[in-house]
Image 1: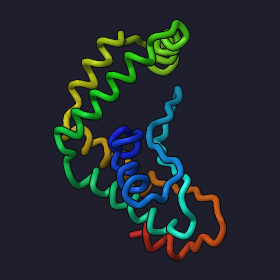
Image 2 (image 1 turned 90 degrees about the vertical axis):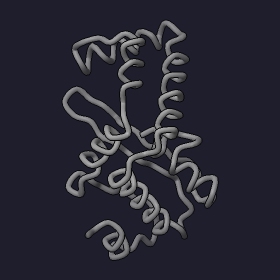
Image 3 (image 1 turned 60 degrees about the vertical axis):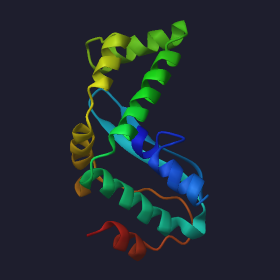
Image 4 (image 1 turned 60 degrees about the horizontal axis):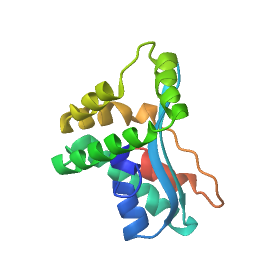
Length: 160
Protein backbone atom coordinates (compact mmCIF):
# COMPACT_ATOMS: atom_id res chain seq x y z
CA UNK A 1 0.00 0.00 0.00
CA UNK A 2 2.77 2.39 0.93
CA UNK A 3 4.62 1.91 -2.34
CA UNK A 4 1.55 2.25 -4.54
CA UNK A 5 -0.45 4.95 -2.81
CA UNK A 6 0.72 5.50 0.75
CA UNK A 7 0.93 9.28 0.59
CA UNK A 8 3.51 11.73 -0.69
CA UNK A 9 6.33 9.92 -2.44
CA UNK A 10 4.22 6.91 -3.43
CA UNK A 11 4.03 5.92 -7.08
CA UNK A 12 0.45 7.06 -7.59
CA UNK A 13 1.01 10.30 -5.67
CA UNK A 14 4.00 11.14 -7.85
CA UNK A 15 2.20 10.31 -11.10
CA UNK A 16 -1.35 11.54 -10.45
CA UNK A 17 -0.75 14.49 -8.12
CA UNK A 18 2.71 15.82 -8.89
CA UNK A 19 3.15 14.97 -12.57
CA UNK A 20 -0.40 15.18 -13.95
CA UNK A 21 -2.25 17.18 -11.25
CA UNK A 22 -5.45 15.17 -11.72
CA UNK A 23 -6.13 13.63 -8.29
CA UNK A 24 -7.68 15.58 -5.44
CA UNK A 25 -6.93 12.85 -2.91
CA UNK A 26 -5.67 9.31 -3.21
CA UNK A 27 -4.45 6.40 -1.19
CA UNK A 28 -3.97 2.67 -1.09
CA UNK A 29 -3.82 0.14 1.69
CA UNK A 30 -5.50 -2.70 3.50
CA UNK A 31 -8.63 -2.80 5.61
CA UNK A 32 -8.40 -5.84 7.85
CA UNK A 33 -11.19 -7.69 9.62
CA UNK A 34 -11.40 -10.85 11.73
CA UNK A 35 -12.20 -13.22 8.87
CA UNK A 36 -11.22 -11.28 5.75
CA UNK A 37 -9.61 -8.16 4.42
CA UNK A 38 -9.45 -5.96 1.37
CA UNK A 39 -6.80 -3.93 -0.32
CA UNK A 40 -8.27 -0.72 -1.64
CA UNK A 41 -7.04 2.00 -3.94
CA UNK A 42 -9.07 5.19 -3.93
CA UNK A 43 -8.83 8.56 -5.60
CA UNK A 44 -10.86 11.65 -6.27
CA UNK A 45 -9.99 12.49 -9.85
CA UNK A 46 -10.67 15.01 -12.57
CA UNK A 47 -13.65 13.49 -14.43
CA UNK A 48 -12.61 14.17 -18.05
CA UNK A 49 -9.39 12.19 -17.46
CA UNK A 50 -11.05 9.30 -15.59
CA UNK A 51 -10.18 6.60 -18.15
CA UNK A 52 -6.61 7.83 -18.55
CA UNK A 53 -6.21 7.63 -14.77
CA UNK A 54 -7.59 4.07 -14.72
CA UNK A 55 -5.03 3.09 -17.36
CA UNK A 56 -2.26 4.58 -15.24
CA UNK A 57 -3.55 2.68 -12.22
CA UNK A 58 -3.62 -0.58 -14.17
CA UNK A 59 -0.07 0.01 -15.41
CA UNK A 60 1.22 0.67 -11.89
CA UNK A 61 -0.43 -2.51 -10.61
CA UNK A 62 1.05 -4.46 -13.53
CA UNK A 63 4.47 -2.98 -12.78
CA UNK A 64 4.27 -4.18 -9.15
CA UNK A 65 3.45 -7.69 -10.37
CA UNK A 66 6.07 -7.88 -13.13
CA UNK A 67 9.05 -5.97 -11.72
CA UNK A 68 10.78 -5.92 -8.37
CA UNK A 69 10.60 -2.54 -6.68
CA UNK A 70 13.93 -0.79 -6.32
CA UNK A 71 15.77 -1.53 -3.08
CA UNK A 72 16.07 2.17 -2.21
CA UNK A 73 12.32 2.66 -2.81
CA UNK A 74 11.57 -0.21 -0.42
CA UNK A 75 14.01 1.13 2.17
CA UNK A 76 12.39 4.58 1.99
CA UNK A 77 8.97 3.01 2.58
CA UNK A 78 10.26 0.91 5.49
CA UNK A 79 11.64 4.05 7.16
CA UNK A 80 8.37 5.89 6.62
CA UNK A 81 6.38 3.01 8.14
CA UNK A 82 8.78 2.71 11.09
CA UNK A 83 8.60 6.45 11.75
CA UNK A 84 4.82 6.59 11.59
CA UNK A 85 4.52 3.46 13.77
CA UNK A 86 6.64 5.05 16.49
CA UNK A 87 4.78 8.37 16.25
CA UNK A 88 1.41 6.61 16.33
CA UNK A 89 2.24 4.95 19.65
CA UNK A 90 2.81 8.18 21.58
CA UNK A 91 -0.61 8.34 23.26
CA UNK A 92 -2.20 5.85 25.64
CA UNK A 93 -5.17 5.49 23.31
CA UNK A 94 -3.05 4.67 20.25
CA UNK A 95 -0.97 2.24 22.30
CA UNK A 96 -4.16 0.48 23.44
CA UNK A 97 -5.40 0.37 19.82
CA UNK A 98 -2.09 -1.16 18.73
CA UNK A 99 -2.45 -4.07 21.13
CA UNK A 100 -6.25 -4.30 21.05
CA UNK A 101 -6.38 -4.60 17.27
CA UNK A 102 -3.79 -7.36 17.33
CA UNK A 103 -5.69 -9.27 19.98
CA UNK A 104 -8.92 -9.08 17.99
CA UNK A 105 -7.47 -9.81 14.55
CA UNK A 106 -4.52 -12.09 15.31
CA UNK A 107 -5.12 -13.51 18.79
CA UNK A 108 -1.43 -12.99 19.48
CA UNK A 109 0.61 -9.92 20.26
CA UNK A 110 3.72 -8.39 18.74
CA UNK A 111 5.61 -5.66 20.50
CA UNK A 112 6.37 -2.55 18.46
CA UNK A 113 9.98 -3.75 18.20
CA UNK A 114 8.90 -7.16 16.87
CA UNK A 115 6.65 -5.48 14.30
CA UNK A 116 9.48 -3.19 13.16
CA UNK A 117 11.81 -6.21 12.87
CA UNK A 118 9.26 -7.97 10.64
CA UNK A 119 8.90 -4.89 8.47
CA UNK A 120 12.69 -4.68 8.15
CA UNK A 121 12.80 -8.26 6.84
CA UNK A 122 10.42 -7.56 3.92
CA UNK A 123 12.25 -8.02 0.61
CA UNK A 124 11.62 -6.77 -2.91
CA UNK A 125 10.73 -10.36 -3.81
CA UNK A 126 8.09 -10.39 -1.03
CA UNK A 127 6.48 -7.26 -2.47
CA UNK A 128 6.27 -8.79 -5.92
CA UNK A 129 4.97 -12.16 -4.64
CA UNK A 130 2.22 -10.52 -2.59
CA UNK A 131 1.33 -8.16 -5.46
CA UNK A 132 0.88 -11.11 -7.84
CA UNK A 133 -1.49 -12.79 -5.39
CA UNK A 134 -3.32 -9.61 -4.42
CA UNK A 135 -4.03 -8.27 -7.90
CA UNK A 136 -5.40 -11.38 -9.59
CA UNK A 137 -8.22 -10.59 -12.03
CA UNK A 138 -10.75 -12.67 -10.10
CA UNK A 139 -10.08 -10.61 -6.97
CA UNK A 140 -10.37 -7.22 -8.66
CA UNK A 141 -13.47 -5.03 -8.31
CA UNK A 142 -14.01 -1.46 -9.43
CA UNK A 143 -16.46 1.06 -8.02
CA UNK A 144 -16.85 4.45 -9.62
CA UNK A 145 -19.15 7.36 -8.90
CA UNK A 146 -19.65 9.90 -11.63
CA UNK A 147 -21.48 10.67 -14.81
CA UNK A 148 -20.90 9.37 -18.32
CA UNK A 149 -18.96 6.25 -17.37
CA UNK A 150 -18.67 4.16 -20.54
CA UNK A 151 -18.61 0.48 -19.60
CA UNK A 152 -17.07 -0.50 -22.95
CA UNK A 153 -14.07 1.72 -22.22
CA UNK A 154 -13.81 0.22 -18.72
CA UNK A 155 -13.81 -3.26 -20.23
CA UNK A 156 -11.07 -2.31 -22.70
CA UNK A 157 -8.90 -1.12 -19.80
CA UNK A 158 -9.47 -3.94 -17.32
CA UNK A 159 -10.71 -7.01 -19.19
CA UNK A 160 -8.06 -9.02 -20.99
